[in-house]
Image (cartoon, rainbow, N blue to C red; front, top):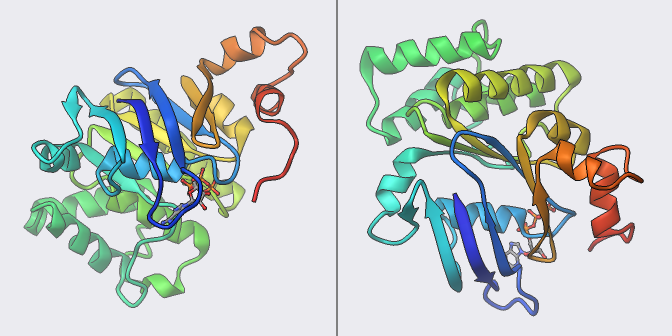
Length: 246
Ligand SMILES: Nc1ncnc2c1ncn2[C@@H]1O[C@H](COP(=O)(O)OP(=O)(O)OP(=O)(O)O)[C@@H](O)[C@H]1O
């Protein structure tokens, strides 16, 4: 995927959210889009998915331009896991997942089999028929991820998928993402504020700040290039500074 000279100012906003942003990631890797609060990560992801329209700039997903002509094709290629849990609380996990599968034209036994397979893989097999409002935060997050996987996306985009989950759920989610990337060859784009996690998960990261690219590269190389930095978090702070963001 790539974005080139991307600009976006929301209606009524005084400052742009994305301002001349360019980066690209090769197919088949786990990529991290990192940056402080308000850096423009969610906006960029939303533009990549076709949920928000850019003011200007070029966006490509698997060599398809993100425009009206390719929006439907790109929608089928992408699975989106939003930052906020997007599930119906009064429905059970299975009912939610049937609903999301139906949106992609999946139904019947093949859909039910797939749901059962993912519930098992995400440790939810005993809770499929429980209403989601009764779920813990980690269970909701895991169900939210399954909803994005049912149509076999080629690119999985996750906005802070491990925010607010316990160590066990986080471990399961990260191991799943590694396996899914390796075994299925699915490309993954992920955002997080947990830089230790990003360092161990991502093949490549792009750091953005105030809507612009700050640096991009493989975590190990970025750390090597900065002898004074012990880890990715040190490199991140070196470029983005210590000042807190609004
Ligand atoms: N719908 C909107 N209308 C106006 N401004 C918005 C809107 N959505 C985001 N913004 C602003 O755009 C900027 C970038 O926000 P965005 O959510 O893309 O950043 P982020 O990097 O994902 O932040 P965080 O890490 O806090 O989730 C912020 O200043 C934010 O306040």
